[in-house]
Image (cartoon, rainbow, N blue to C red; front, top):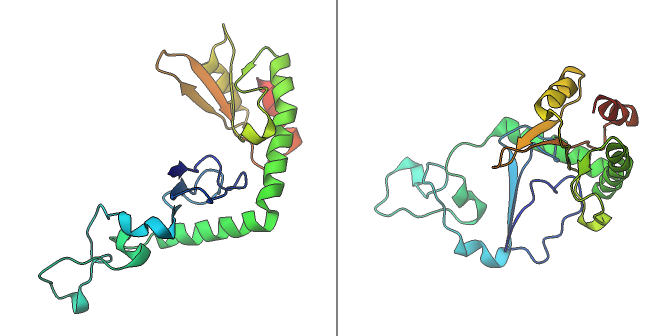
Length: 198
């Protein structure tokens, strides 16, 4: 069983109790630089995975002498075909240290508090909030909204011009959505500013 934890890791507590594999890039809720992430493999299934790339770092090659057969290194190293992204790793470590200091449970509580503020404020302005009535255990830090007869690309641009970073999404039918993703460090004043611009 594999879990894509991209939208959860760093925002809400995550258990790997029933997980074989877990992957997440670090640039979202973990707040790390791009191209640095986490890949967890339960010990009992590690030998079932096969690397998809060969390189100088993941095959056995004593003294850089060509071998008759390619043999992967054991453990996680067999998936690291090339050079490490050292800057990304250092940035990810610093970000994870900060998240550990703040506490994932504290971050989750703050995200839910922000959601509890934003949802009724947005609904009062005529926005449809997806999963507005979801119980806290089924919520995420992301809030996606839409409003009929509104020019969402123009509203998204107004938010951007006002210093509020959101994401404009479009489904296959061409319908637009605005996605807000406040993190624990966003202030109540910033949330109020976003609502004002919406």
